[in-house]
Figure 1 (tube, protein in one colour):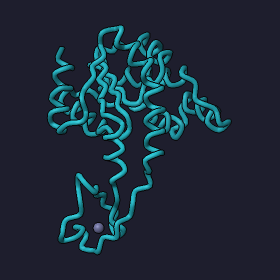
Figure 2 (cartoon, helix red, strand yellow; figure 1 turned 45 degrees about the vertical axis):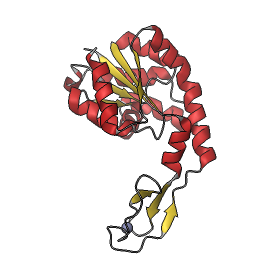
Figure 3 (cartoon, rainbow, N blue to C red; figure 1 turned 180 degrees about the horizontal axis):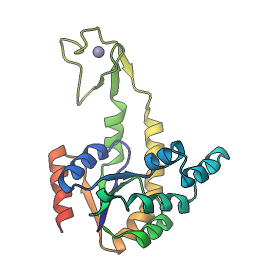
Length: 209
Ligand SMILES: [Zn+2]
């Protein structure tokens, strides 16, 4: 069994590519955030332990997350590996992960910050049905919104500074991790500033090697 780690800043189109990787490889997606929420809700022993940290306003320790992953990768659908999304975020987490599962490929979808700002900041939604449009990439048709109601352009909340600071936090956090995986020779940078199909094509090609 060997697993994949998927990296990508917010707004890089990671969700779409994750779907495609799952379809092509058959590997299930493992989101540690979702697993943590589920464990807390189901009141599993690990969930109960995690909840104590959360209620105290503390970060859930890596050991708990690793324990959740250990349990997850024992399930039958993970027999050929899984696709990690949103984990690891730090080098110690990557080291701990390497002790419980074999990671064969790390895929990083890269998009220049200013392009992400364009993508996110041009968004607005229909005030009536909530459908999302984009000033440049997906403008409202002349005939109006498909809900049939008049579209009162409502800006998405994200402003440029918020997006930029989120991206700078992302880079600060992931660059040591990228270097760590690069040293293992399993890190693949994918240019995410292109057509969706081209991105998927390059990702699948990287996974084949
Ligand atoms: Zn509408």
